Amino acid sequence: MLAHTLKAFMELMEHDFVSWETLSAAFIKKIVSYVNMNTVDASVQQLSLSILENMVPTSRHLFELVKKEVTLDRLLTHLQVTNAQLQLKAMALLIALLLSATDAERQEIMDYLREKNIRQFIHKNIIHSSEPLADEMAHYLYVLQSVSLNLCERRMRTSMDPYSQEQRELLQSLRQTAFESESEAPASTFNTDRRRSLCAKEFRKLGFVNNSNPAEDLRRAPPGLLALDNMVYFSRHTPNAYSRFVLENSSREDKHECPFARSSIQLTLILCEILHVGEPCSETAQAFYPMFFGQDHFFEELFCICIQLVNKTWKEMRATQEDFDKVLQVVREQITRTLSLKPTSLELFKTRVNALNYSEILKLRQTERLHQEETLAVPVLELRERLKPELLELIRQQRLQHLCEGTLFRKISSRRRQDKLWFCRLSPNHKVLHFGDVEEGPKGKAGTKGKKQIFEENRETLRFYLRVILGASAVYAVVNLVIFYPAASAWTWLAFVFSLVVYGTSYRSMNSMAKPSFTDDGSLADGGIDLNMEQGMAE
Image 1 (cartoon, rainbow, N blue to C red):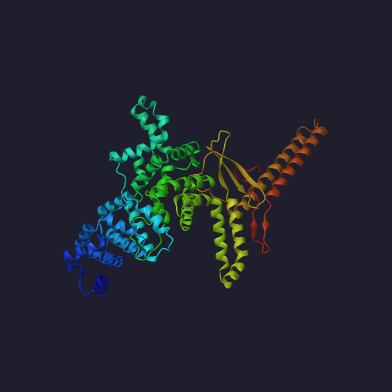
Image 2 (tube, rainbow, N blue to C red; image 1 turned 90 degrees about the vertical axis):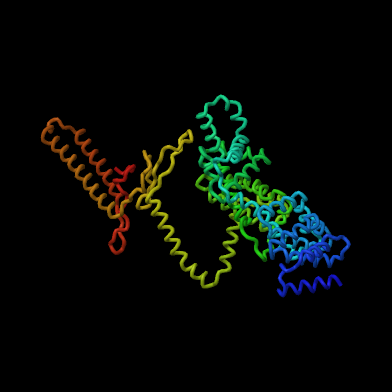
């Protein structure tokens, strides 16, 4: 009879004939008593929990009253029963209390649930229960996960305060943990300037952009102080992995080292975006991560796995500082793809995400691209095949043009220094490569000559050398015929003939190098090799 009465009351309230706020405190306490009693029928307790769940969001007064009368211990007791419907209603009331609470009250409730190991119980007895998980329970687990992760929002949106002693100590602890053995002994003997210089050097090794004032790197919010919390957690809970990360990259060449601090800040932001930290809960979503309920410090432990993944992927890609964004983009894809598999534990997540290396990502991208191409409509495929030759020719012309413009390269010396440059370009007729040392890098993009300008300058250059050859030969012949004719011998004229052969051969070679080509309609197609090009050997 009591169960039918409560059910009729629920149906009456659902039609909004009566406001929840009109209910008396005595009536509410009577409903609460059914929840707190052990000898009441399960159907009565289910209906009582459902009434309280609908009551909580309507007003602050009712929320406080229900929170006071229904203890969290009692709700946890109902969660531990074998009756799936009673579990569901108890979870519904718990979620209603969490959503209606203030930030401080929500933090208090979550801390208490953590003390009672509620996550482990849910992971073992609800998620991995022999019975399939109901859609409604999946939604409540999603909300519980979102509410818990959103507790990180305050730290995520708080920038670092450079005047906060506590925050400065956390920042210094990162440096001390990584370089304690190097700086502990001599630090007392350093003066202030020397100590400041040493700290800046060590913060640079840690991967901070502003090594003289690393607090500036944490002024961006998000991820704000949450990134600092993650770095400190990683250094304290996995000190060996932390020291290995930092020292391994400190020994690499500057442009090849993976910056720990910069990577941590960006990775924290990526995890916040993937896990939707700071976003309101959806009213219908059911997507929760089973491994979330198997770990109390889920976000921090996930960060510890992923920051090591960043270093691993960095090495696989042989990345430099210019590839930073590309590496983090691959890491985001690795995390997202692995989370979509819904691993049941962090250990399983770690195994799968490490197996999904850079080469596997490239294979997956290629497979997905081919699959997309297979699903294209027939007219699109025909159009693509028709345009393909023209596009390939356009690409070829663009590449040749870029080769003809030339590029500056770093010249690596025997000591691995890169302070010198050399320039290389393809000749306009695409037959010869010209290269040579460059004293200083250009201030801007070097200008290039047009084929008409090269043709005209080559013609003038050849004329100049022809005049020089004829003039020199004429002077030599006149002098020997007129002035020194009695003394001239056969060797004199043999030398004269030899010089003419050398002149002729050199001129012919230059003329061949500068030979232009024309199209069928008579227009200039190629001006030939530029005889006046700097670093060239034509002259």
